[in-house]
Image (tube, rainbow, N blue to C red; front, side, top):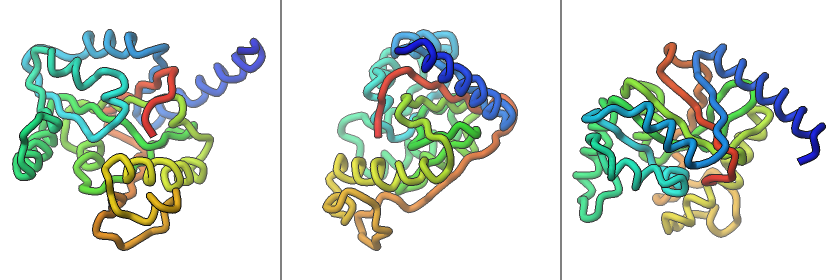
Length: 212
């Protein structure tokens, strides 16, 4: 990367970090997935209860397999053979987790997080419940402002996730949100997080493209 471009990016990132800190959200930049796992090693304690939100990023970074091999009480929503009722029970237990790991559909440089959810369990846990929330995002999730963040969610996140989940929604056909009334709709709750209780939420930005 050109040195001048690198310098501008560093200036932007420092300003962004300050904006998140003012909103009582810690923001850290990590170079790669191994740095992320090292960070989690320093954070997680044996026997802690750990929940996760639905997220491709957690799979792509190896976090799900990492948790399955850690001496923690992992509330594994992805465990094979779970019934719908058992999955719902995991969702409810996760609201009382010591640590909750998830991603975000988008964040902006003004210190805000933007998320869209079908069941609402992920955004509920991000807002309130778990003692500590860790949000893991790739560089592709960073946007300059609210409008561009929302456009990303409507035109990339929603269609891609609906396709991944084999949903029969219009966005799968046209490639963007059309605010449908389909029974398969997965975008029921739009949530903007602008502030948190002090020291509860940490956003980890990985220097890679991750998720949608």
